[in-house]
Image (cartoon, helix red, strand yellow):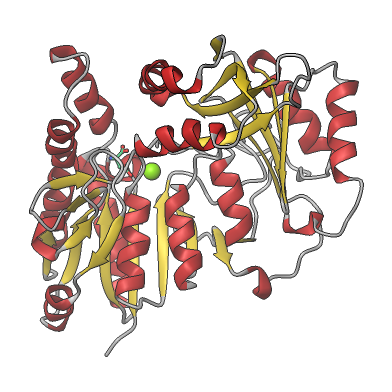
Length: 421
Ligand code: ASP
Ligand code: MG
């Protein structure tokens, strides 16, 4: 059996017919290199955004099942067009949607997780000499319901399929040349990373670097699937290889800096200081599938015997969260509940900061030198995040990128726009 390469092409890579034809050439080149090729494709250009808009213009709060029915069509269009393009160039190719293969997800709409991928059909189809093109972003439940994996989820489809097929590598083709030390649109001397570990990439992705869907990196890490982020349009370039930290040589404490502008901070004041309150609060959010990022609980006030809990969520979950908080407040008996969306989360990330003291203080000092106020702080082994005011985000990003020596000498030519998520 030949080695399998899984290639994923994002929306900007298949935005029009000319680009689809170019992508077909990239795929054929890999096939000609002697590999079996399985392709995962996103919807063309801004199709998904357009579909979401259409849905919302009909119903401000569309049912999630119907949203999935609608959004999953975008990838079906691109997969069949791409397959036709490959066939027109004289190669055997076939497209499959998630239900045809059996990309089984949990029974959750708009952000389902993949639980299993059947490979029989894929293997048979490869044996018959086909290049396979699969619709990303979608799945099917065991009851046959169509689901989607969350915005940007085709990356996760690709990595999960690569892992299920035990592929040699999963190449994520996009319109940037790899993973950068930070967003090159904001910091022009941002440099492309040759390599980055799964752990760092995961933190970068969660911190707001929109290059890869975080769950795709988690899956890659779990199955030790080497990932390469590379440019569709300059495909001789090496891109960035993402691999296990044990396979890397780390020479800088910080690998990258990221800003996440999509969070909202919620503050629940005066929660009685008794066991189980945080569990009630976050249990309720978890039940609604709302992910919480930073959490801070204040010291209990002696007189009132209450404390405050502040946490951040994604903007899109705000209405659901407020609704939920209102409901459970009967049980919580908290005081004021407020939110603030004028915030940005700035993070520095690097496996090299383990056992290297002084990194956090350098970060805080740099923000202070730039007169930037820190509103919340959270840390992990390889990441330090600060919540700051939104208007300070660019300044913070530039200053931190500088202080940790992440820039390259040349000012980047325009490296494309960051991919849509
Ligand atoms: N088309 C979907 C989206 O725009 C999935 C993806 O592109 O990965 O979110
Ligand atoms: Mg994407």
